[in-house]
Image 1 (cartoon, one colour):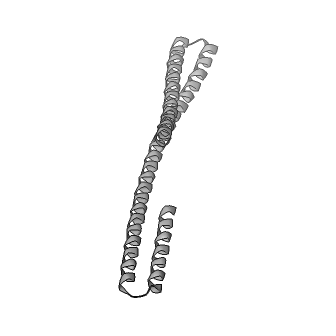
Image 2 (cartoon, one colour):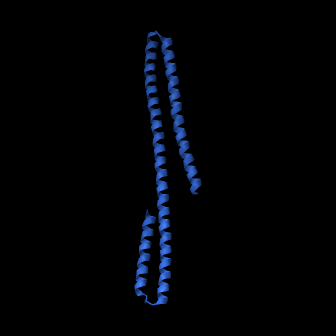
Image 3 (cartoon, one colour):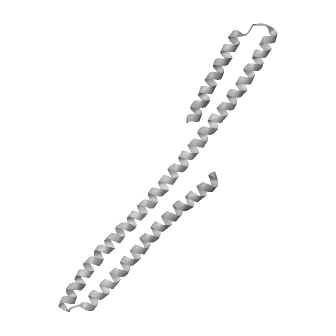
Length: 156
């Protein structure tokens, strides 16, 4: 946006110079041709500057769209990680309850085989949830590093 403001400032300055030059020039035929040439030259410069300003505005809009897309992707990844974390927390809570049941069963020596089976199943679930959470986190980190590398290659 600063580029657009700079272009606009330069355009206004050029038009002011043209107006001042036209006012100072005598009104004969040869001078009129020189003025017409100067005016056409300034018009060409103005067109070039306007085109550059338009190109800069389009480039800025494209950058903004890319950043918005990247932000949406990051929010989706964060949501996925939060779901994994919640699942892991629930499994850990279940594991704590199963461990407590196992302690009680061990103290009373009743139903110990069933309690051990439930504890082992819960522990396996907890390990699977932890692995899934770790994997999702690593994939998110790899995606960020890959994006940074791709950006560096594109701009470097």
